[in-house]
Image 1 (cartoon, one colour):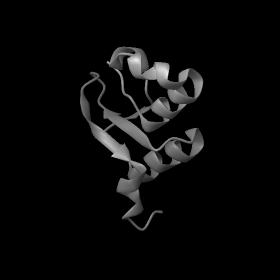
Image 2 (cartoon, rainbow, N blue to C red):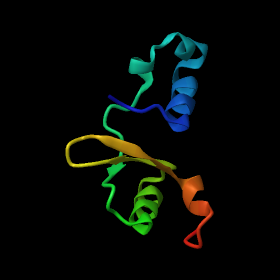
Image 3 (cartoon, helix red, strand yellow):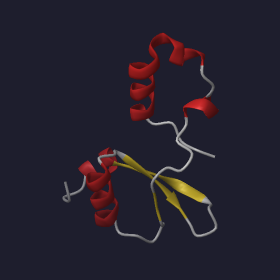
Length: 81
C-alpha cells in the first residue's frame, strides 16, 4: 500500500517531465507515508505536518488499518491554525 500526494506528482513532473505520465500508480506512490494513530490529538497531527513540511497524514491504527486521512485544510477550519 501507499499514497500519492500532490507533492509526489510535482516532484515526478519536475524530475521526469511528461514521461511521468507513463508511470503506474504503484510507481508513483510513497510506500511508507507519514502516519498518526487515531487517538492522537489534532495538535500532534499539525505539529508533524509542520515539522515534516507535508500537508496530510494517514490515520492508521496499530494493526495497520487505515481510518482516514487528515489534511492541513481540515485543521484550518479550527482555531488551531
